[in-house]
Length: 516
Ligand code: ADP
Ligand code: ZN
Image (cartoon, rainbow, N blue to C red; front, side, top):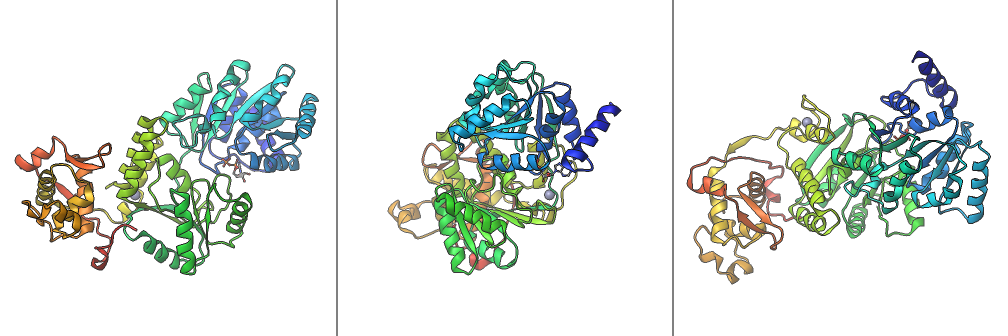
């Protein structure tokens, strides 16, 4: 073992110029060298590439690297060549002639690594009989799983590689994979008893904060004005929102740009370059922005909308603070977003799993205990200490006896015959005199206006807490009507006490504001 240790360290130093391995790199490499299938889960920037590039040099045959990031292949191959390592790539951006040239050079047996886009693997097919394939590395392996957050159909065929090369170890790499996705990756790739390595996902330098989405544009403007020299990313759910938000920010003098997959390629790469070179302070983007963007001093990441799942959320906030310096993350939680995401998830692929993941995301946002604990436990890390760097740790919620509030709310739901969505219930409780209330003659019902002492914001918070506590529920399949559950009886008739908490973060003048 000491012999191999020495060889590994020499290779690391002489071919890559690094003094020592990062966590897990050496173990992963040893595992591959012993011929075993391996699943490596490491956060972005953790140093995944070395895990296949270094063994590639020690193996007699070639290493095939499957990667979806065509745009980055050339850079990776160039930097390998700069280190004196023979490598090439094959993808659809090349002409037939270029591909033929590389395929010829592969036959000559001097190339150690070939990067291939999954959809271009077939170009290698004829070579497979004559090539000695020593290692197959599958980068961004979560793309194979429809349970992950970035499913790519071209990945689904990769399962045949194990059958084609039964004695070649496969290394699957990804920055994000929860337990279900991990299982799915190894099943779909036909990995044989894979050894799984999970690097710590804890990023202590990222603060975690969730805010109600009330007046979120104003909140964002205030946030940015506070730090004029710090750049950040605002993730939005829709392309339209990225553009509208960028425009609103520009109007207040913020150097902001929109970025989404529907924009012209030239504009996208221009925005990306400006952001990387600190010529653009804020990018309002869909999740299309980020993969492969290497900017170490992103000081903050805001989620304008609730993300679809914790994996995506974690990857996106992970783009802040790569340099290890303190960085802020803020997630805006809105009831409206939740409803919309529920709808998307229930209509999409794998609805059940996606809905469950969304539910976990929501539980995170509604958390009343250390958020980092929730986040890390989602990735299978056991944490016993509170982090001290999330909003809950910094400002623990105080509970009060909310039984009367709960009784008022649940009775109102009964009076409205469990047939109205949350905003109507709040209007009813507060005695609002709006047209809808009068049209329905709700002002004539008992319990109308019994909650006029509380703000719209407070009722919204309390009702959401009651939903989370399981006393009532949203009927997503019926226009989001609020219904009671069997537990509501306990509060209404059996004297059960209800603990609520105040998450009031706004001054009273803002209380009337609706979500923007
Ligand atoms: P990932 O693919 O996990 O996002 P990379 O493989 O691109 O990460 O590595 C991230 C950065 O860390 C690169 O600049 C790489 O050169 C550097 N790096 C990787 N391993 C080491 C190491 N053992 N020592 C120092 N730097 C390293
Ligand atoms: Zn915490």
